[in-house]
Length: 88
Image 1 (cartoon, rainbow, N blue to C red):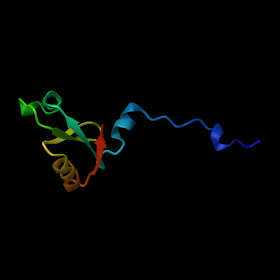
Image 2: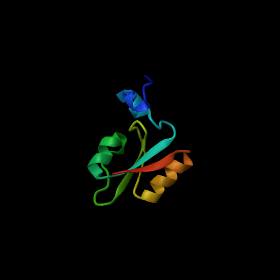
Image 3: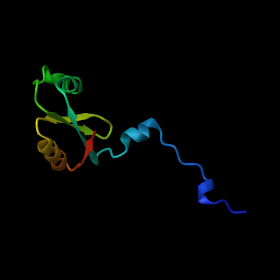
Image 4: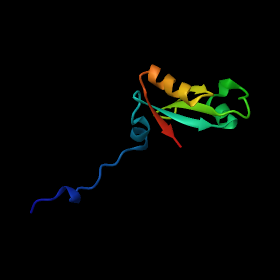
């Protein structure tokens, strides 16, 4: 008897493989508050309060850029040949 494809268990991805999915191809755009910005970008020091901030993150979560404009974050990703994707 032939096995159908539904009988084949799904292939599992390791956490490392999942983290690298889209590496060098995708940039995640995430709105962050000032505390999250300070954690992601320690060299920033004290982030401005009361304004929207947008982080550009690599596929593995590596912080790449921080801006106060979603459009600027998207432009940064595109300028670096990355596909921008929003994170909620």
